[in-house]
Length: 190
Ligand code: GDP
Image (tube, rainbow, N blue to C red; front, side, top):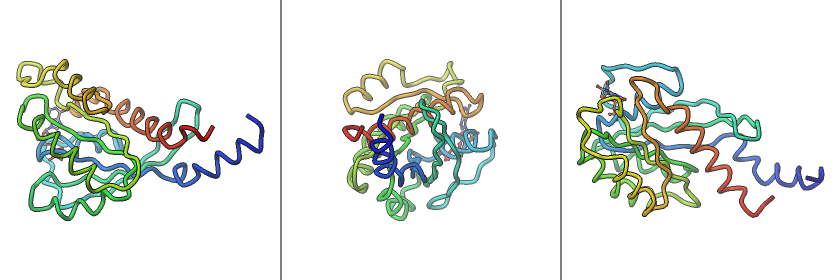
């Protein structure tokens, strides 16, 4: 790419390169805090307290082209009473993780309402990754991979299965989401 074009692109995407805001939503107890904690600090805490409204953390992701981007992660409360407050944080989001627990069918059924809520309360394009967490609990599965993939395809979501406990696919979930945000925001500008 010619230098001039390269700088034009950098200028257009500079706000994104500074920081990508990402919200983490889903029912209470699905593992949102541990998914974020595993990614940011490589830690798992089996005794996390329920999130009150929103907790903020940040980290960095390396894109396929080698660019490092910062991400702000807003870990929201799943409980109904905090949802109205948490919605305020959706507005500026560029990406979202909708987490459900593969061992609890109702948390998967509720993905639809989280999706509606995100789409109602965000402004601008939103890249969404659906995350089936606790995939280490294979004996207790209530949601099959095929079922989740079919839903993600119908709703144009990315999908990944993770275990915050084992650390499986956690980095991939954030890397793929951020790569998706970057591509969605630079499409047609190259
Ligand atoms: P949140 O309410 O969605 O933020 O969920 P938490 O991160 O607080 O986790 C809720 C419970 O699920 C805790 O007891 C965690 O130990 C447990 N948990 C979270 N992620 C996993 C996982 O990947 N595997 C297993 N087995 N348990 C998990």
